[in-house]
Image 1 (cartoon, one colour):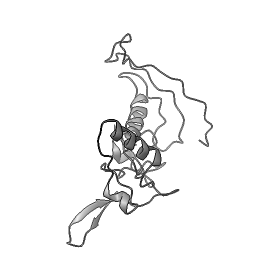
Image 2 (cartoon, helix red, strand yellow):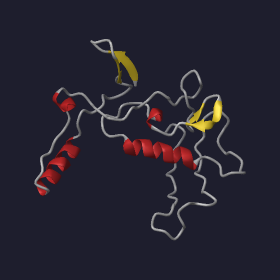
Image 3 (cartoon, rainbow, N blue to C red):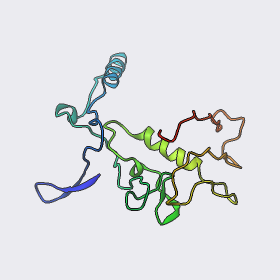
Length: 168
């Protein structure tokens, strides 16, 4: 995400294509589901003007705090700590590295949940490597005093992560 001067001289937020495949401007499965739901509720399926011009859109500002392996290559480390300020974290759309072309709410939430699950409980040692050290895959840390009781429907339940080698 960056600002660009428009025809009338005003600055506006925009983004550009990152690495890899182009961002989708529409997703066929999502389009079909929207049509089915509209038919069930006697509604009208709609899209965005971006679909007419094959332009991917999102209403979320993304990027700006790139994840990098060093301060020269990013604003935050792989654990979403701000370089030079290891007790400050970025846990919003700024940490998403590219326009996904679709609503990024779940991606933003997943990244924030992952980062929060690696913060130590108060008074415990931090298992995350110091900034500048190589990335290590870590197990999440269970909270000592969760806000939601263990017996509640919405209680935190750990699902073990699948084994992944360092290449991803």
